[in-house]
Amino acid sequence: MTYKDVLLTLAFSMVHDMNAAEDILHDVFVSFAGCVGELELRTSLRKYLIGSVLNRARDRFRRNKAHAVEPEDLRGATRISTDPEQTAALSEETRRLSEALTQLPLEQREVILLRLNAGLRFKQIAEVQKTSVPTVQGRYRYGIDKLRTVLGGGSSE
Image (spheres, rainbow, N blue to C red):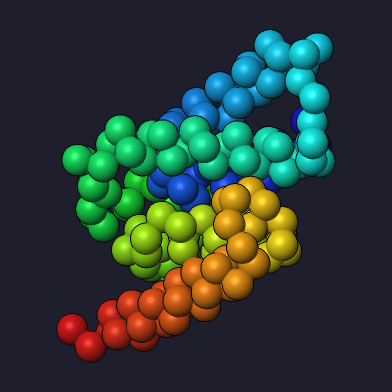
């Protein structure tokens, strides 16, 4: 499908587990296929699918909240593929960014991932998150500021 790569990247960015991300994507597509005749989209298909992936990732996050992701658990998360060339292409910066993203509140992480990975505009993100554009802009700004602090402050140890 046209949106598969964007949706899989978004799911992976949210849950930091490729198997879980693939499960989320599978569930979204199965659910979509099951209601395709009855579904009346009030938005674009892309936004609907992104919202579905986010909702499934949020549900998984809430269920697993007691088992927080520790930075050492993310070592395997950067290995998206078993292909050695793709694995080698993933850098230390990607790992550090993944770790830093886990430190953000869920709403800020979502805004950043939707903006950077899915390429959505703030207005579109506001529709997906069911909030106002200024709220989304604030979440983005605070999230980026915290990422800068975490990534910039990580080298002082």
